Length: 299
Length: 318
Image 1 (tube, rainbow over the protein chains, first blue to last red):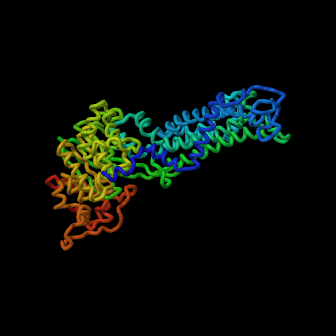
Image 2 (cartoon, rainbow over the protein chains, first blue to last red):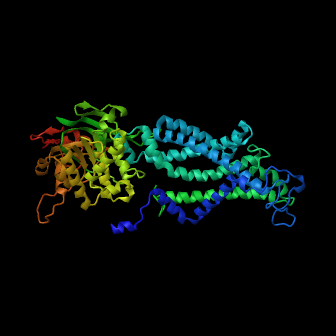
Image 3 (cartoon, chains in turn yellow, brown):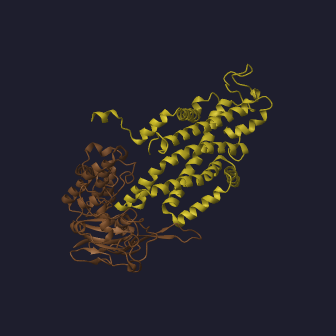
């Protein structure tokens, strides 16, 4: 018994956490993401100013790096004299929520489509996957633009548009996972026991398909956020006066050459950091969840 | 009364094929008939790829049979739908060959064993837990192992979990699909003895699928020998080991290692490879490798005939 006591027993979740903690870049990504999310969610607590407080007397003032800056406006102001830092915090709420809601839609509908296609196969598989193929035929951003353009402007439409773009990708990931799990012997054993189809799907197939779904969700969230900003930038997503990052970038980009570089640069950096943090986290999760990689935990 | 009767069972699989290519037909189980008495252990022996596992799984309707009849306790279950099969699932279970792939890696041992009980609504709450512990004890697992995951166990221990799951519904009939072939030889005997003890205690009936004749010798009452999708010989164990009639069985017997190296015995080395079930030879399927083969063997398929004493063989010359 003594030997066994020394070896720490872990559940698979603990195993994955252990793997992740050893992965420095993944932990950096996770930390960065948490900071960004906390700052955005807690924007009213952290923002030094009202993000919609327009004051034309302080147009395009620089931030802490310059003597011309105004006290209390750490990252300077934008073209309408609004505090850039506060707008970044509030803008993140919009950009990130578009990303999250779009991803949630894609994961929900994608799982539904992927499971029905993968598990039931045959004609269901054919119909679902041909719809997916059609959606796949369009470049992602173009499809999002077309959908958003058709539905009209606004962030709710942008959420739906981006969600629709990522649904086929998620459906494929889920279908692939379900196909491989469905053929395993422990699923056959469930048939031998007499389990119902629903029980097999929800208690055995889906939980065992979670690893790729989690990994791809994280990586997709990064691109979904990028697309949210892109739609804002192109004018079909969030509308002024929203502090949305892509929109802010778009409206301030003309000042890049006139010397007020900060107005467009900081929203850009905010987008960059969010995407990087999610990519690092996603890569780390993939390593931790994929048992084929050496040292990875089995899930 | 026979617990299970299998008559002219056929299971073919389509292999490959496409838009312009006809699929090959894999005749995994081709016109197989046998019956098993209550409490008996029938061994189904044959080389890999001869269709013995498919036969076992088709009987449990894990594969849809293509023809023939499966009769369980006098009731024909061949054409029963999934839903109608459910009540029989309580009476029939399966023990798998691979103790690594047949247990859901995300479930604890306790949950795996409780699963069949939950599916059939047999026990609940405290009763269920007690029953799970009782079964775990029966198969040689300890109470503390209940909340562990399959990956924390060795092969032999996992096979015990698989056996516990098969016992959970209190079955009458168990298909054991090569239950020990994935295990170390030292563990094999433990598991075989466990299976035999459990049979003595609960009185269930085994269909024991294996390629290992020494396992057959250990646990079976009767033996059916399969070759390329067909049963070529079937006899009580002692009769088969003492007096094998089919040339294929003879060859198999001569290949069993014996502990005494100085013992002189007839050694039959078969020429050629086992034909694939996608391209079975015409006539007697064994004629391509048989030392007795004559012209008739490649033209006419021998029927499985009773040669007296419950000894059936399919050969033109025996």
